[in-house]
Structure formats: structure tokens, C-alpha cells
Length: 488
Image (cartoon, rainbow, N blue to C red; front, top):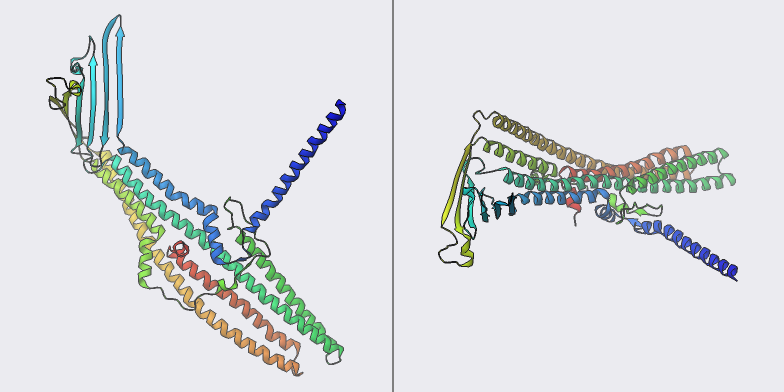
């Protein structure tokens, strides 16, 4: 009986294990399907850019840059946080009460270099230093410290905060530049994918046309109207078109693989671009004419992310120069505090909260030669000059690159227009040659001679459209506005 129960339990355990394994395999097999389903069957440019901006790892890395800058500013603001302190020190030895020292207070730094503080002090003992003596109820003190020399206009704390704020602006510009670079490559790859799809359509149409001609020539040969050599020539033309279509299909598949590098889902899993997914051919068309106003160029020179980063770096160097200049001044610190009896907290007679006494101090120090300070200031000035020269160089380079893209757009627009006319003229030549061939006044060789330039011109037209489209994207990238153009 016990053996039967054991066998029954063993079978139940095996059944559960098998069921769990089957469920797990089913879940794993469904994961790719969920990933594939997130790519629409017609992947338009807008849908593609939305997927890239939302899920691409580089886009998420770019989103971290401003957060890093904000964290840096938050850390620098910590230099102005109020500081509470408390300390107690006691000494007992050989049954003697040497001293008990208690000191607590609050220090508040301000932006203008003044430190405000308030505190309470209570000391006692048989061997207490007289200068540490306090009233029986303790000593209240409120005062401040001011630097009249070094640190009056700027100090390390204020310089750190201002440099962190400049760094925040740099991280925001870095985010835009990262997104500009990401979108430029992504849009170029998407344009190549659309162009490859249209080139494949041209190749498919050429194959279908050649198949129809081959069937017609073969029928004429069977009817005795054409020699057998014409069927061989028609078949060779068909093989050539099929080979061209295979090459076009290969380029389309490879373009799809390059496009897949930019496709990710929200869980940071790569999306697979299935063969059934096709682009929208209309995404390849561009404006035939374009004019960029001078104000747009000037705006690009003022707001370009690379220039914004360089400007933030110059601001940091300028702050550093100001700080080094401040170090040439002597240290001259004034400290003053009002003193009061702690009994005023209990409303004891004869005590006042403040004004029963005061403490005043002044400190001065200054290096005699200032060699280190003057050397650091010279380094700061040289770095600032170098950064300004680099900014002017980058500004000129960006202006010239913008003009290069404008020249490309104008040239490609003219070439696209000429290409359309050339396609129409080649179609007319082919139509005339087909009429002559039907009338028996031409040959397959001449027809093929008219058809090949037409196919090549159509493919070349697709390439010109793609180059013009990419020139527009490159213009926005060089102007630093590509991400803004696609921001929703």
C-alpha cells in the first residue's frame, strides 16, 4: 500500500514538473512575439523616430545628463546648508573635577560671504581656564563673521555653486547633442531602408516586364514569327533582371538589419524587424526647393548644443579666473558676537537676552610674494583665452558646415528635377522602341538598350531622393536643431 502511494506521489510530482516546464517554454516562446508585435507593419518615419526617442539606450543615456547636472548643483548648494554642532568635553582625575565643557550652536552661511551663528555655552570645573568661564545658567551668543579682503566678492563655496550651474547648462546641451547624433544616424539608416525598398520595387517591375516580353517572344517563336535566337536573348535579359532583383533584395535586407540597431522596446530589449514590415515610400520625398534665412543661421550659432557646451565651459573658466584673482587679496576677517546670560531664557531677574557683553576679533594674513596665486591666475587666464579661441573656431566651422549642407540641398534639388525629366524622356524612347519592335522594325537588343538606361535612371532617381532627404537631416544636425524638429 505504501509503495502505491509513493508511486502515486512520484507521478504527481513528474506531472507538475512537466506542466511547469511546458508553461515556461510557452512563455519563453511568446517573448519574441511580444517584441515583434511592437513594430507596426508599416514603419513610417514618425513611428520609427518615436520608438528611437522613447526606448533607444542612447536616448535614455542622454536623459541622464541633466539629472547628473541637477545632482551636481544640489551637491554644491550643500555648501550653504545651515550647520548644527554640539560638543561636550569632561575631565575627571584623582577624585578631582577638572572641567566640563559644553558648546552647541548653529552656523548659517550666506551667499554674500557673511556667516551668521548663534550658540549656547556652559562650562564649569575646579581647574577651568578663566577665559572659558560662563555664567551659572550658561552663555548665549549671536554674531557673524565677514571677510573684507579675500572672499568678499567670491569664495570657493560660491564658485563651486556657480560652476555647477554652468555644468548643468552643459549637460542639457550635451543631451541635445547626443539626441541630434542619434537621430542623424537613425534617420539616415531609415532613409536608406526606404530607398532600398523603392529600388527593390523598380527591380521587381523590371523582372515582371521582362517575363511578359519573354513569354511574348516565346509565343512568337512557336508561331514562327521569331527566330529561336530571340528567345535566348529574351531569356538572358530575364536572368539579368532576376540577378539585379536579388541584389536589390539583399540591399533591402541589409538595410533592415542596420535599421534594427535602433529599435528597442520599453524593457530595453532589441526589437526584431520582420521581413513583412515595410516602409512608407512617401517618406523619401523631399521639398524641391529650400531657403534658410540668415536669422536661422545666426540662431544656430547662438544655440547650437556644441557651442552651448563650450560656452558653459568658458563660464566655468571665467569663474575660476575670478576666484584666482580674489586670492591675490589678503585675508581680512572680522568677527563680532553679542553675549547674553543664559538665565534670560528662564526670565531670571537682572538678565537680558543679549547686550550684556560682546566679543570682537579681527584676523589678517597675506603671502609676501604671491607666487603661487599669480601663477594660478596666469594659468586660469591662459585656459580662458584658449577656450575662447576654440569657441570662435567651432562657430566658424559650424557656419561653413551649414553652408555646405545648403549647397548640397540646392544641388540635389536640381538633380532630382533633372532626374524626373530624364526618366520621362527614357520612358518615351522605350515606348517608341517597343512600337518598332512590335512592328518588326527593331530587335530585342535595341529594346534592351533602351530599357537598361531607364531602369538605371529610376534607381538613380531613388538614390538622388535619398541623398536630398539625408541632406535635410544633415542640415538640421549641423544647425543643432534636429532633435527639436522631432520633439513633440
